[in-house]
Length: 455
Image (cartoon, rainbow, N blue to C red; front, side, top):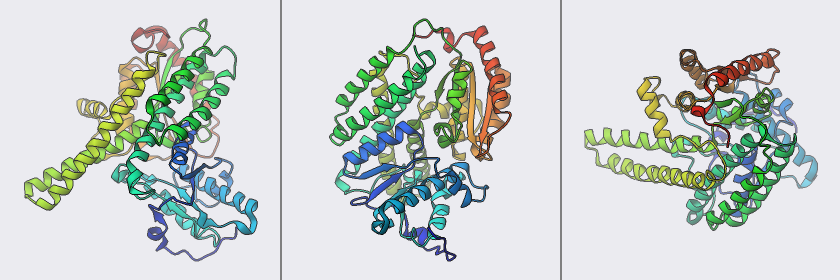
């Protein structure tokens, strides 16, 4: 690939947006390994040729074509797409055509830099003559990540339902991994089991997802859980329970966060990370809040046109949120009798915590609205420590740290900030070791989760 000098800013509107994925290869960055693979499987079930790109192999390329001032996930995903396209060009030779691919990079509105990833990456791709025709498919939190336009209209709603279901299943498999691995009979058993289970669920979702045969998919999930329980060594005593919050990419991308969950486990922890479904629910919840506020404003001015628009949005986003929470609760009701897994808090409950404590307003937006009350709820539920994982200089997570640090000190709950960039931090192990010592002391004094034991 040769880099050019001319950048056409008009391509930010022409080559970034919603594009029909028929007869295209949809390239999905690997953020959360299990969740992204299951989502790609659902896409394939609906006839979309979805592939997960190898991640972190192109980090040097990501560094080369960024300044270092960008959000760290922007560097990682920049490297992922450049590396993938470079390898495809080598593999296909003269048959390589960038127009055959659509790079999938969603965005978020508001002050978070995530909203600018696809714009910046568009500029970089346009600087390569052979990649200027590669389009970026973008979904936005502004409309609750609607899938309209990527396939035929009659199948959009079914794709959205199956996609959300795959996200929840991915969350359950992640929580199964974190629940079993600290207590496994032999090192490595859990990782191998979860990897094979992920591939099994990929096949199941690709086959049954388009028909929305969710009960049969859950039957398979129950079989996986029953098998996974046999890996647990009942002789291993319960361990301190650590909750993780933070920026969604960093806390779920094991390479970017230097496998922080495994490191915590190495120092004697059992860990629960905030879920991917929580963010999806939040976007629907936030869109519903905005629609209600817009309707109230239009009503006071008695503007019928805007009132109708906002009422339609209220029904649409309210329906999305109701369905998502219903589906999520139904999944956890199926698995909770089988094994003790942490369930998600409703986004409405998290907003109530913020309002009760007067800590932040949902009007501010960003993941701070989830992380701050999420940390408070971890503390209330008896977790023995909380870790905030985020990119270096991340504004929402810095807000979170500023708000909750003093609160955790007052509550006597160990708290740790773990910011990351592409460097290796020499004091990281010492900080985690000290944090885990504090968490163990908290565990000895208070037990965990209100004194309940491991089941």
